[in-house]
Image (cartoon, rainbow, N blue to C red):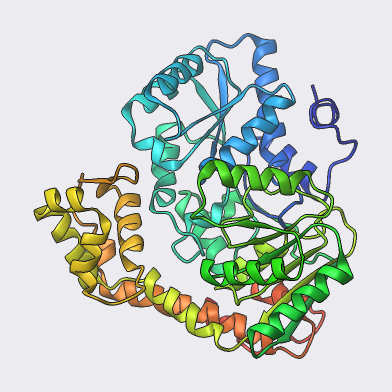
Length: 494
């Protein structure tokens, strides 16, 4: 079958969008690609259709080694959503991740080895597992897709250390054609993605769809107190109607506004990371099925939300970066109809984001102290839990989330294995040198500050806000003079 036939018969579309068809044909010719495409514009089809074409070709030739496309994805929920959607269309796809029991995982490995699946979704961490690598040796990897590719780059807004080992993983699976896909990447991040994939720029074709969504109306309003924010949220709900998202940074603030909306008789959903997983899934499903649902959410809400008719996205608190902001507003108006994106700017919100930067960037000495406790007081840590460790590290200080960052990074670098429920931590490797490199640590902190500064510049920018975003992501098209070197603040210093 041809790509167009698969587009129609499997996915129900008559035409490709934008550069989708060129990307598909490029990959089918064995080329490598970097795809930067706005949220909701169909990045997944760019690798799903080549995967099915290559599988069909192999079946028609009855090749000895069954082909498979591997998709690297950072989030369990995202994997499940993608696989569920593909299987509902009759596509032989599956995932392997930590949500599976040992028995389920072994059964899936047996099915993979037998050639049952055409697409496999995994996190990069899976490549550390010898049993997984043994299964892959029985398949021929014909395409590697790296989803959420900004995670490859330590300069991106969601760096994951195992993504930086993809060049090594590519070698192990025979250096197949590779496509990296993301909705947001500055020039520095795009260069770093290509480098981390183990490729040279002249061997990778870049496909950049641009970031302009003509149907999105971008607005920024400066506010000075919570009553002011509430008034604007109520105005948007009344004026714009339809499904909408109001984003908050802090769960505490979200809950305060939830109560105030209830007092006003405004029905809404509440979604944040501290809810039970089953409850989060239930809320997400209600939102997806509703014609007019309003959800108050933290940034935990969004991945896997493929709802076309979201009429507004309000940021009730300042997000941490242009990347996060653009990704979140990208969930509005995917049907091409007008949608409103309102950012409510309160200067006091900067204090919260500055604290977040401090929490996201523990200094080398902090990492040494955490690792020392895990290494020499493991019994006490596991018996008493994270609060005991937090008290030893922070004394009686209030909110301080550096410990969560430190444990997450130690886990991502393979230095510890960490079970949340029941709580248990085991040291599995040495303290990573990258985490105790003072120069690297300070450079990362300065880049986070530069990203926040660029967002404040965006708030203050008197001109075309879309042009500002366009230039931030390095897409100079000569329309208007862009922000003075402000964007460069997030780009310089490498």
